[in-house]
Image 1 (cartoon, rainbow, N blue to C red):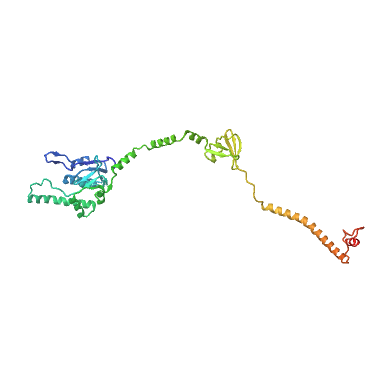
Image 2: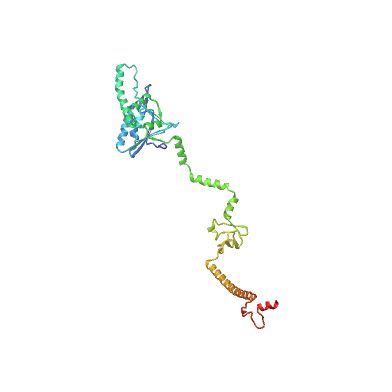
Length: 358
C-alpha cells in the first residue's frame, strides 16, 4: 500500500505476556483487532510489523478475520516499515498475515520467516513433562504446517524444512513461495511517487518557458516580430514582410516603399501605406511550340508560293527546250518554223543569223 494507509495496525508482539521479571507486557490481542476493525468498510487494510508471539492468540485473530471475510469484507494484509525502511512478518504474525485476500510485501526491504512452534518455560523437565509438552505442541505444529500448505500450495516437506531451518528470507522469496501475493512499492519508489505527486508541473513549465525566453537576445525577439518573411525582388534586393507564410502576404506590413515591385519568381507585389495590398501572379509564359492550325496555315502559304514560282519556271524551261531543238535542227540543215516570239517582221531567225555570220 502507498503511504500510511492502514485501517488496523498490528505492531509488536502478538498477545500480552509476563516477562522473566514478572512484569506484564502488553501485546496485540484479539480485542485490539476487534475494536479497531471498521464496521462501515467492505475493504480493510491491515498493516503488520511483528516478530511473532503467541500462536494461540494469532489463531484467534485469524479466525476473527476469516469470519469477517465470510461476511463479504475484502482484507488486504501488508507490511509496515520501521524507521530504517524494513518490514517484518515472522513466526505467529505470519498466521495473521495469511488471512489477507491480497498479501503485499516489499520484495527487497522486508523480511519474512517461519519456524516450528516453541514450547516455553520447559526447564528441569523429566520425560513425563516432556511427553506432555510434545502432546501439546505437536498438534500445533501440524496445524500451522497445514495452514502454510493451504496458503502457498507448496509441498508439506518443503515447508517443514523451512520451518526447521528457521532463517528469515526477503520479501521476494515470500512472493515466490506464495506467502505473499503482490510486491508493494519500495521505500525509494514511494518517495519518488510522493515527490512526483507534490510537483507543480504547471509552475515548472512556466519557469522553463521563462528561462528559455531569457536566453534569447531581445534583438532576436524583435526581429522575429518585424521580419517574419523575406521577399527577394527581381533586381536582387530583399524586402521584409511580417506575414508568417505566403497565405498571409496580402495585408501584411512591409518595409518596401509604396508602389509595385517585381519579385524574382515573376510575381509582383503592390504596396500602399506600408502594407502589401495585392500579390500579382507571374505572367503566363509564351507557347514554345506552334499549334497544328498555325503549321497548316504556314504549309498552305508555302505551297501557294511554290506554285507561283514553279509554273513560270516550267513554262520558260519548255520554251527553252523547244528553241534548243530548233537551233540544233537548223545547224543540221533542217528547218523548223520559228516560234512566234522569235519570227517577228524585220527580224531574222536564229538559224539565219548564224548563217549570216558564217
